Length: 132
Image (cartoon, rainbow, N blue to C red):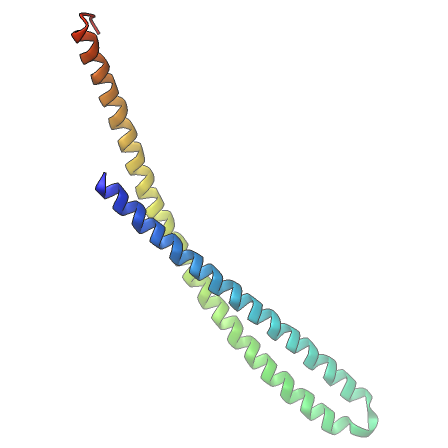
């Protein structure tokens, strides 16, 4: 049926969009992991600077600046991740809704086929002289 095919095409397009969103989420998660790694590196450098008594002031300031920059990057990454997660939830809800419509359509077609098959069986039986 053309409507079902159009609905299936629409769902397939939505699935493609969801896959694209998932790829974007994965990329954001990788970026977040890299930023977490940068944060750990910054923390390590800060500790090292505190242990070096001759250069403690210079190393401490550099480490703090790097930590601030890394933290700002991490917060930005977290904001992007939250936004992406919300978009993913919305897309998933839209997919569930569309999938429900398709399932309803399939159920209706199945019922119609069963009803039609019963009618065809009765017509065949009558044409062969049998009472159905």
